[in-house]
Amino acid sequence: MKEIKAFVKPNRIQRVIEALSDNGFKSMTLSQAEGTGAFKAKGARPSLDFNITDSPVVKVELVCQNEEAQSAIDIILENGKTPEPGDGIIYLSNIEDAFQIKTGKSLKRYDL
Image 1 (tube, rainbow, N blue to C red):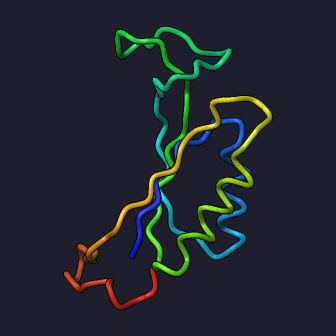
Image 2 (tube, one colour; image 1 turned 45 degrees about the vertical axis):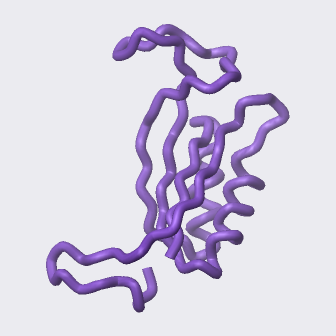
Image 3 (tube, rainbow, N blue to C red; image 1 turned 180 degrees about the horizontal axis):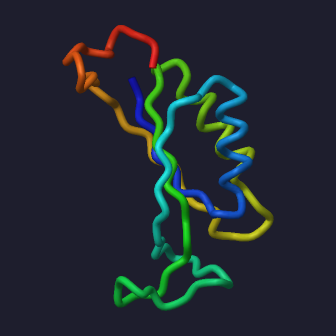
């Protein structure tokens, strides 16, 4: 299994979510975040929570089967990019296993 973490600009997140959902990636987690990358967006401002200048981003997290990962990445790239610099970043990690909290069953052999 693979875990994909993508940091996407808020004005592109709806397109990314809809495209992922339309292509079978139904389960994902979204979080509002503040990025401090090398590129500072036009709307960057001093953070209320941290002593830095930030750019707003949305973190999308999803876990999928190994053979589905490149498809999900391609969907995020296609729907998340803009003509401007600083569109975000995608991380790909291996997941050894996952367990349902209710049953304790491994999800390693099941569709996510």
